[in-house]
Length: 454
Ligand SMILES: Cc1ncc(COP(=O)(O)O)c(C=O)c1O
Image 1 (cartoon, rainbow, N blue to C red):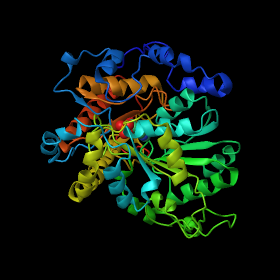
Image 2 (image 1 turned 60 degrees about the vertical axis):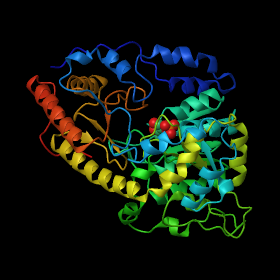
Image 3 (image 1 turned 90 degrees about the vertical axis):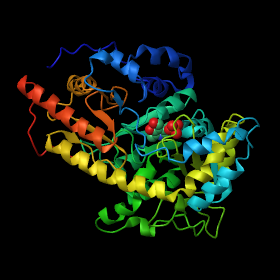
């Protein structure tokens, strides 16, 4: 079953562009970005099924069953059932210009998060938010916690930002907070994805508090991408922390310039809520996306939360009417649907646990995900060849996974799979059991039947 590994070209990940930018920040090769991206045969993002099948050399007609694409991580329960009806009556939002102040959506989201309206700005998906943040730090220096979403490095390359990187550690993808703090010296902004794409791991809240405090000391801005935050129940995190909760005493203004005290519990956006001294600047930028949780990737809906000054700088750089009228109008409706949110979170939590348990029982190495996707690999050597055994095998079972060739440090050895319906998830488990059995029969695996590491 194992096929000879034929790399589909000299895969130069899009991230390589920011590597070049690091070496020569003043002359970041932005003009090289497109050609180099095209040189990589691997699609840079999930949801590009045809390109992926082409890379794998799998003919979709040879697949055993209807094709399911698990390479993009969307909520299998969405969009909410009322959305189609709402859309049918929402034409009025298309034949007039959207209000550039985004009043409806901003008010609804600010109230939802308990921040001031001046602290929040909507964007054309979370992707635009990343690029606007990078534009605000043009020519600076960034630190990226890898492996992670490739758009941070791309946005840096496009804005002449030199990039250094720090890797999550081991198969558990541990965050080395001390090393990260050390690496922050001389850096303007730090990108941390939480929960992280593609590992699904959630940096502890008190670790983030430590990072934010250190960022303030060294004059850096901590950018936390919470695109998948809706899927992770932050409340559970509290019970996991052993020992002292350092964040309980965390003060953003450690130099006594103000009395803002960050909340020990709850979502990170509470750290932005103004205290008595509104002059205290919390160097925190939170990026959000509504496209994943509400399964509306085509609508393009994201937002940023930060200090009012940072939001103003970011909004000034946005293309006029970047947030379309439909997207703006639907936000209050989405937020009002508490039942959808609650049902989604509960269902994703249970289904992810069930899937992870089943996959570990097959002997696979599975990351500790707190998002709506899982990252897995065959046990033993983590090689691109073994990653492609999984990816190609799944494709033959008509299941498209997300390759990891473009994720630094994963290098194709791992595969990311979005959660789907229970029925499809069962298909995934069966397909992986088949693939592992075939691998074992071919003598290509050290796959134990149980006890795969986390
Ligand atoms: C971590 C992360 N942030 C942001 C985005 C962009 O999402 P959106 O569709 O809202 O632009 C993605 C998309 O995959 C992502 O994985």
